[in-house]
Length: 272
Image (cartoon, rainbow, N blue to C red; front, side, top):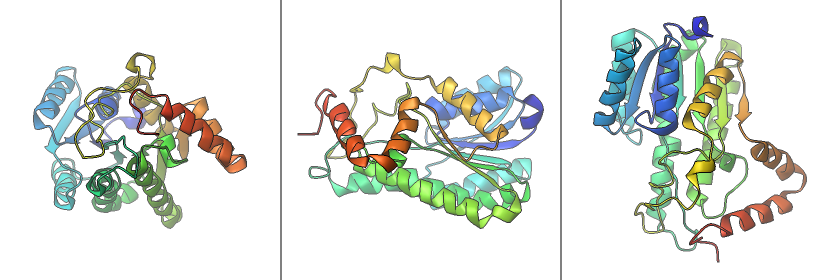
């Protein structure tokens, strides 16, 4: 596996914490040249320095993926330093928790700007290099991209949009050797729920779920690399997610009720 990723130039968005950080560290351990992108420059520098101290190679570019110009700059800085891009992991994302009837529409705009448009912008500028290298384009998604989650309208919409976008990119480049993978972890122990936006756009603060019983970011990272190595198209990391993807085609009404009941049990659930 080390030979597969050695010296590959890998951009990871949302790399300042959680899954993005774990993915960046795992690529570095496999000998890749990792480009860390996120809004928190302080965190990026800390992770970069730790990767370098451990014998890896890393470079960081402060990036707000909701800005097309900053995404273009991210790719330009990467190419300026390493001449190309082999792999792009579109991981940057935010969540929300509010009923659509209560939510301020600015929250949905923010979700789409970061989750969907961030993926589009980074892909737009990195794609010519990835295609030339017959590399991999990755989207870190969720089961929310396969079936709508109540209380997460903006999140589900952004993930569905990402799926349609990446699947189309795959088809358009069928003859060019481009690998496109959508990976859907289950609930992962990260900061995403703490920063999830509420109906008025403020951050939630406390997670409504028990973070101790979730999969680790490191586990997800290992699967990202494994999925790339095996050229996977879609990888859903939980049995619950796989069953959801199957049952929503067979008994969609049952899945609707199952998710309604599950989400309504959360503390201070927005479902009435």
